[in-house]
Length: 314
Image (cartoon, rainbow, N blue to C red; front, side):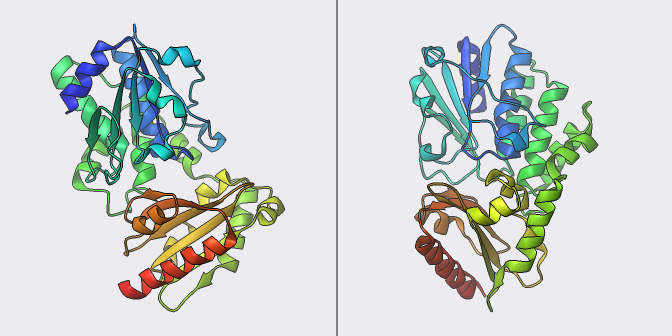
């Protein structure tokens, strides 16, 4: 499959790479890391990474803005996106060929070519695998910038190598990547430093969560609360792991109100929660998922179901 993808990359003069909405470091790392990998080995090709930019990820890179006509006759690759509803930029189906590269459960088997590896810690890890295949098959080289992006993606999706998804292979790849010339301290600062307003919002999270007898934790962040701390819904992505260190916690959910919907950020230290996310317009990994609801009544349903999942797990 990796060689087939490499062969398709070689065929096309224009390649457009998408990723999921509400991006995280692995979304940018895999998408723009792949763009950088292709561009450095095929400088004559036009390679673009598209999607709405998240300012919290500016330290990594910024996506491109392109016109509709660029998609004509192009190869389109979607990274780190389980289902079509979560692909950022709906023009993904306007190209000549569509490739899906992902590590989530393959429930939505979209695309002409699919490479899905649920054992991979991240799609950034998979892109490194693609590089290794390209190195053997076509003499590919990996630039320092591509290495930086892929390392960031792996670090982000493994929670700094703390999550069970970080395997021996993950550590081996990370070991290869840190040999490249990029500033790890600067990268970690970009990923984990928080502004004062976010530290204050994090304090609010610690002081106002609800913890039930089976280890289910939840909190609702309304628009008024976000305004109080001068924070955006995207800012809260930096705080989603805050409850992971609570002794006795089983799983948790953070609701973040936007203008027309409520983001649902689900995390777990044991029970599978991605099936719950799928019921509410979302999906993801067994222990880390996201969803969307459209009322606080729906949010209460999610809470009730999460409590039951934790009760059964205990």
